[in-house]
Image 1 (cartoon, rainbow, N blue to C red):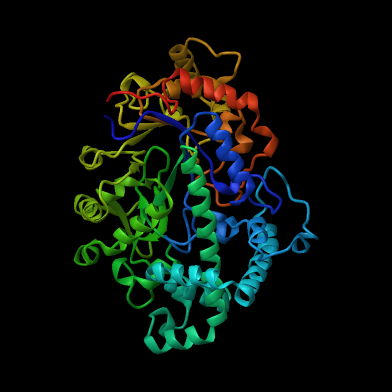
Image 2: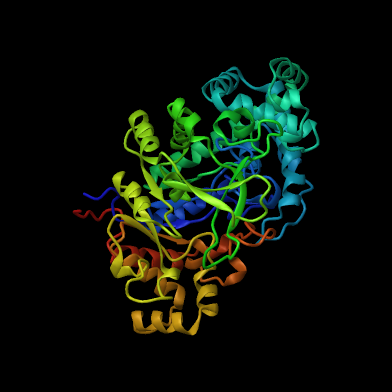
Length: 506
């Protein structure tokens, strides 16, 4: 029996859902999506990281590795629970339907969340109070630091923690106690919105699981420098002791795509300190994730074998070095405490035999991207006949163009290779050809971005990695999830043995 059964699913971040508050959330549209997936015989829904985002709105740069994004909370569900009224929605502006309008959504949603918090504080039933208190106790290991961090950030006009006064930046006990008392109301608010986020998310996940759909979450290997995680656990990161700056920064070296490499700026881990703590922070991070998702995709998996580290003061990634990481020890420690890990490894880019050995030792499926398959010869690892069973095939990911956009701008060589491989383009369009190709492979799992199922072009692209603004904003309109689309997806899912009721040997 394979590690994962043969199945199909979609890639879609909740911000891309329809809704009337300027950004997708965990309300009715999310349930309708699950109904659509279930009716189409899909068994997987992959999301991007769900944390609270900062400048640029990237889910890969969050204020916490464990908290949820308040903007994903559904005001309509708060209304159903008696914390808001229809009158609170009386003056909602018109929003664009096909783009997230982050700034305007924040202007509308945050006052609603604050009002709901006030109503909860004044009117919560005894049961609601008990549930809230239970949540705060269970999640105290990250929630206490996160709530204080966000309350401080708000009080100090958004400054990064390493620019705060030294006594609070370095968490001196007297300063911590002073600020806790001073910001008591704001700390309560921060805890309340985390409670509501996870109430709504857990309810949605239960609905998905009841309909035979597993949720794939996403763990970025690194956390943002300006995050509650780094502020609360400075000893497990490579920081300048005087300034709190990243003494060693994460990135990747120069390659075919960039002559200066990529300098991400996140502090890398102090793996020696983590080893001494038996990887406690990582174990907690996986445990927190597995409370809320069924499967975890690890972003930049190769960094667990060895990582590129660049010294403070460098402006490009050129002058870095590879440093070995204790990946085997880490995953053994996590598995020892949490059992066999339902993990997918994002193993894209320049992958060494050592990285493959780490991945295969734990039987983590790697990723195969069809858009990468046609730029070279028959040895290309992304060509379907080179796939092992234990992998996940995608037409493209959130970092790629859509299939239609990719094909329209592909080189003549790539187009020719793809057409030779497939024989011809069907009248259904290149996106359906690539979906069928993905479904037909031996890969245990096939995941398709919803943009490809809808046949959209480059205007629907989720992220352009080298572009600082304008990313993470695509949304779909509710009427596009038609019965015809569902029937076609169901047909191909069944045809290629990925429907739920079909069982296969390994």
